[in-house]
Image (tube, rainbow, N blue to C red; front, top):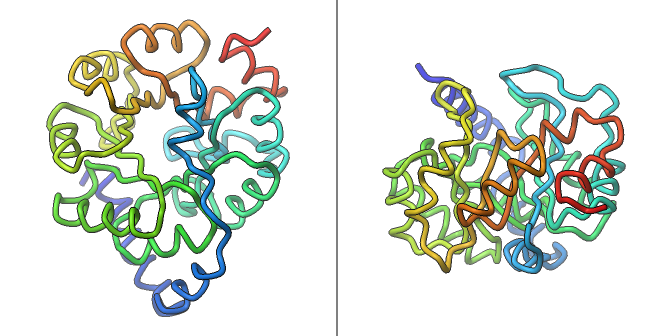
Length: 259
C-alpha cells in the first residue's frame, strides 16, 4: 500500500466520524452565513511570481518542522514578506494540522487561503467552505475521475477555487478534461514521498498557456523559483523551506527576490 493510499483510507474513516458528529445540513447552514470568498486564483494572478506560502507544522517525511508554531503570526509574517496567498494544513494524523489553524491564519490577514487536506468525499467540500477557506485541493492521484468531477462541480457551486494537483502527464490529462482554472505540479511523489524538481520542468510544456500554473514542493530559494519561471510557472507553493527559517518574513522576501 502506498503512503497516499493509506492516508486516503484513514481520511475516509475520519470523514465518516465527522458526519456522525456534524451532519452535512449543519455545514450548509454555516455556509449561508460564511464570509465571502477572497478569490484565490485572482490573488495569484495579481502577482508574478505569485507565492502560496504554506503554514505546516509537520509532515510524514520529516516529522515536526517548526516547534514555535503560531498560525496567526506566521500568516502575518508571510503577508509582510510578499506572499499572495496562504496554504494551511488541516490534516491532523499525518501533518498535525487542525481546522483551528486555518481559522487563525485567515483571521490574521486578508490573504486568500487554500485548505490543504486530502479531499475524498463531497462532505469535505461543504466543510471547506464552512470553515472559511477560499480554495480547495484535489489530488488527482488520490481519487477517480467521476468523484473528481463531482467535487469540482460542488466546489464551483460553493464559489470555491480549486487547485488540481498532478504528478505526471497521465494525471494532467485527466485534470485538463474538466477545464480547470489552476493546476499545480507537485514535485513530491505522494506514493513514495521523494522530491524531484525536474517533475515540474518535464510537465511544463504540456500545460496550456492560459492555465494558472503552480509549481509545488522542492523549492528552496530564488534560483529554483527563477528556473521554474523560465519553464512557464507563475505561481509557487512553498512550505517547509520557509517554515524552517527563524525569520519567516525575511525568508519569504529572499525567495521572491525582494530586497
